[in-house]
Figure 1: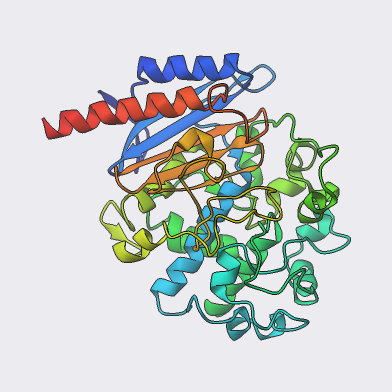
Figure 2: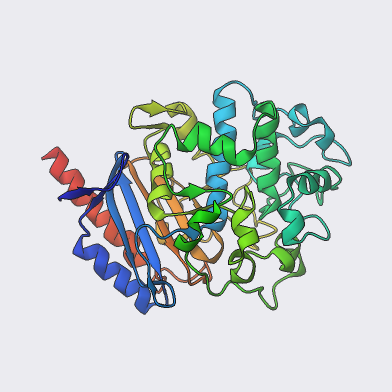
Length: 394
């Protein structure tokens, strides 16, 4: 497979015809603009795109897409980096690092409760709007005033949006308050690993590279609690996330805008058990621990309405349905995170493969495996990776 140099840290492999065919099939299944990238053992092996980023503009590997809750995998890793440095203990309470948080029944919430979505504060603050969601101080003040919906550590309940601010604020408190969260990610994760085109708070000069989203409207007929976690005013869909304000907001649970190549390179850190291109951020033991499931993982998640294969460490895991994500299959050694409307990134800890799929036609994440537009892409990427592995070992 020949390559063409495009920058300091990456090369673009020729697009395998199996990838082209898979992207075409995904578009036949309803996608508009779609992008996929993959790393194998730290080397970029797939970087391709198809369709339209917006009307009249082709999607390319350089197009950037909102990836929604795929962001949480990066935010989790920031906290794990602080744990690696000895600054965070998973069994300590959140209030150990953020004293103002430890009020109104939140005193017993531990870092582990929070990471595993058992923290007890799944709903966004009353009155949240895109404007005050963009105001870090407003969000932190309202979180401090929040009362738990249930006793921390007793119930599985995905914290769809609020989770990001709580985790990120712990990172900032243990960092000494010397920079904002976007700066932390850039200086301590992205730059050391040579990760490009992953942004939390997108610079305005990059706006013309961002795909236009379609769909992701506020659902009708969902349980009331669903909209407590993702209120209509800030619901993660095109009506909010196509705006300039959303692109500028440091939203640590759902705000990253990125290329698939950038996200796949981030997950290559996890696929490499904490190391990428000779840079080690996390110990192998720590990364392998991420496949541990949260407590009572088999129980129905109150927010999701079904069991969810959630890690004890802020990620989602591969595994059988109904808890697993259908596109990924049954492999429990997959660490991943899906995003609203279908975006996904993952790391396969037993094969060294990391993958990201971005798109702009938002759809239900729970589509059946046999009709899901991402299924042929995942199959094609794994086929390419398997062939490359055989070539290396031959």
